[in-house]
Every structure is written in structure tokens, then in C-alpha cells.
Amino acid sequence: MADTDKFKKVIAHAKEYGFVFQSSEIYDGLSAVYDYGQNGSELKDNIKRDWKDSMVRLHENIVGIDSAIFMHPTVWKASGHVGAFNDPLIDNKDSKKRYRADVLIEDFIEKINIKINKEIDKAKKRFGDSFDEKQFRATNNRVLERQKKIDENLSRFKKAVSENNLAEIKQIIIDNEITCPVSGSKNWTDVRQFNLMFDTKLGSVSEDADKIYLRPETAQGIFVNYLNVQKTGRMKLPFGIAQIGKAFRNEIVARQFIFRMREFEQMEMQFFIRPGEEDKWFDYWKNLRMQWHYILGLGKDNYRFHDHENLAHYAKAATDIEFNFPFGFKELEGIHSRTDFDLSQHQKFSGKKLQYFDSETNSSYVPYVIETSIGVDRMFLAVLSTAFTEEMIEKEDGKTEIRTVLRIPPALSPVKAAILPLVKKDGLPEKAGEVLNLLKYDFNCQYEEKDSIGKRYRRQDAIGTPFCITIDHKTLKDNTVTLRYRDSMKQDRIKIDDLPLQIDSEVNFKNLFKQLSV
Ligand code: GAP
Image (cartoon, rainbow, N blue to C red):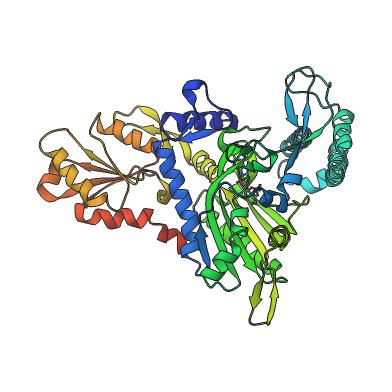
């Protein structure tokens, strides 16, 4: 199945099974805004729990907070977002469509890359095992020419961005004859900067002074509370503050389902450290965050680091953890070495000292910060798109059918166990009710008695339920049930009393966390 096909199926499945709905759908939706349904909100909560517990419970020196979305407007001047949180915009005069100029250039470069890869694939087929890709790249004229074009454009683009040279960004588009994907024309406006922050008014007076912003990142809520938490929690460096919350960005190119949204959720942790120790801690968090991803079992090959060359206005070093989404490798999480930029800026703009007294060195200083920042929605998409599987299975009558199953890591599954009386009579529903009562305090369970047992299994497979428990006539005699495993479809006969331990052994976060080297 082509990945674009798979992506379409994942989106349709997400809607059909109550994971993700378009916001305000009955009014034809609101672009790049989504709602999470009954199963989606459970999956999202489990992702958040996985992240927060791995931060706050597992580290004695990390605490969690929950700061407000609205903040004093000066926060965003100090952080640099008012001045620099921009995307370069360009309009096509014929189609009247608006684009991010940097995305047009990136897409153009990607097309050249695709041509290079095709060239390599062809050669691989021709030469078989003796093919040496490195040598081919270094000697094939067409590949060399194309690579040169990529390198020249990239360095021109980087220079233009670093100098904020919007005319040059437009010139790159003109020189490469980049056309509008809709009209096919090269009739472009000038490039201009567009600030991504949403603003609104506080109170009833509509003067500029009352303009406030919807936060574009949760991190600033942590920075402005640094001293509150340090003092009230008597925290000693190094220590971290973690927070999960909504963020808002007026994205120009909002696409790829929940990958790029205008309202989304972030899980961010700022780790405050001694200046000079930033490289050590940057490496520590890079490794630990990657481990956190690996242990979920979505496949190590689906992740890679991508170090930034173009650093954000606050960063000394930055790397992305990229994930292999159905549309290719894209940023899932960012790890940033933010120096003392944010705290120093807030110190300057607020006039309040944000320093730490280090009793070991007997000196005061503004701490440095390593940040880890991941989007809940992107993590959700990573889990959902990797979990979505269609497989051919043989039925009892020998015929085959396609089984759609979400192989969600059991700890994250929305429903942990489905409790299914074989028939709706003979006291089986009552017995199933007893099983439900045994399990429901520890696990999110679903009780279902409608349709054949096969249909009910399929429905649970489709929402990623790791266990189905069937109560039949034998259960009434010996208190045993059939436990069916989602992934293997194997069935065991086990005692009702053994169910809690058996389920717990698969779904408890503890089993994941024990694999983390914290
Ligand atoms: N505090 C640093 C910061 O906000 P970022 O790279 O702009 O850094 C961090 O964002 C993470 O937030 C990204 O890696 C991504 O997972 C998520 N994210 C950013 N913009 C998003 C959007 N428009 N929709 C969904 N997730 C987004």
C-alpha cells in the first residue's frame, strides 16, 4: 500500500472509530483544528501520562506545573516572539493562494532529492550487490549536477534567512522558476513576514495596550515561574519544570491532518543547569528522550536525529527527533540548548532578578536551560499511523478476510480489556458484570454484548484493545474465561482471579519505565 493511501485510511479510520473529528464538522469544519473523540481522548491522555510520569515521577528533581494560556503581553516581547516568531509569506497573484516561501523552496529541493533517489534506485537494480552508493553519488554526473543545485540553493536560502533578506528569498523562487502548485504560474508577490501569534483583547477597552496573545509555546509559562518553583520547592540545580498544555499558532500552511494544527498541545520540560554544563545535559536529554520513544516499540528505524544548522533566535544547539510519518520523516520533538536567553530576557524586561545562588561555588548566576519539547498531537499521529495495520487472516470456514487492527502499545491503548458475554442470556451478562466490576477500578474496560463474538473481536481490534475476555457457559461452572490477545489472536483459558495480574503485566507503564536509564 502506498503511504499516501495508508495515510488516507488512517484519517478515515480515526474518524470512523471515534479518535479524531474535524472541529465544528456540522458547520463544514474549521481548518487545521480538530477534536478528539471518545477513543482519541483516552489515547491522548495515556500519551500525556506516559510523558509526565516519565519526567516527574521518575526524576526527583523534576516537578510539574500548569500555567495559564494568557500571559502578560511583555512576556512575548522579552521572549522574542513579537519580533521574530514569523514565517515568510508569498502570494500567487493568479490563484490568489498564499504560501510559505520557505516551504516552496523546501518542496522544490525535495523534488530534486526525489530525482536523485530515483537515479540511485535505477542504478541499484542495474548493478545488484556490487552497487556502491557512495561511489555512485560521487561520480554520476546527473546526480552531481542535481546535488550541486541543492547545495547552492540551500546555502543561498540559509544566508537570506539569517540576514532576513526577503527580496533574496523571492529571487530564489524566481531564479528556480518555482510555480504555484494550483495555477502553475510564476506570478508572485513580494515576500513579507507574518507573525504566527494569535492575539485578542483583554477586558472591554480596545486599545493596543490591552492586546494579549494566545501562547505559541508553553515554555514561557515555565520561565516566568522559574523563581516561584525554585523558592517554594527549595529546588537545587540541576532541576526541571515540566508542563503539558495548549499552544496556538496561526500556521499559514496547515496540512497533514493533526501534524500541523492551529490549536495543539505541547509537553515541554525546561531543565535548569549550571552554565558550562549545557553540552553534557544536552547529550543526556537527547539520549533519554530517544530511549523514551524506543521503548514504546514503534520501531527504532522510524526515528532519527536531525541536528539544526539554522538555529532559532534563542538556541545554542538544537536537534529534532524526526519520525517516519506516512508522509516521510518529519519533526516529532525538539531538544534545545537555550542558554540563559529566556531567563535573562525576562530579568531585563521585568526588572526582577532571576538568579540562582549556588552554595557550592558561592556565586549567583542566571541558570542555563536545556529544553525538551514534543507535540502531543504529533505523538498521537506517530502512534496511530504506525499502529494501523491491515492483514489477511483465515476465518474458521477457511475463507480469508482483511483484519484491521491498531497495534497500539498496550500501555497507551484507549481500552485495555473488552468484556464480552458469549450470549445475552443464561446468566452470562450477569457473570460478565462481575468481571467488569473486578477490573474497572484498575483498567479502562468496555462491556459489549451486541453482535456475534467475531464481530465484537473485530471492533475491539479496530480500536486497539489488547485483551478481549469472553464469558461463556463454562465460566459459570469453573470461573474461567477465554482471554484473547489482540496481536496474535491467540486464546488462553484463565481463571477470573488471574485476570488483573495478567492485564497489568502488559499495560502498566511501570514495565516501560523500568527500561529507561534514569
Ligand atoms: N518551546 C519550543 C518550541 O515550541 P517548536 O519546535 O516550535 O519548539 C515543539 O515546537 C514541538 O511542538 C514540535 O516538535 C511539534 O511536535 C509541536 N508543534 C509545533 N507546532 C505545531 C503545530 N502547528 N501543530 C502540532 N504540533 C506542533
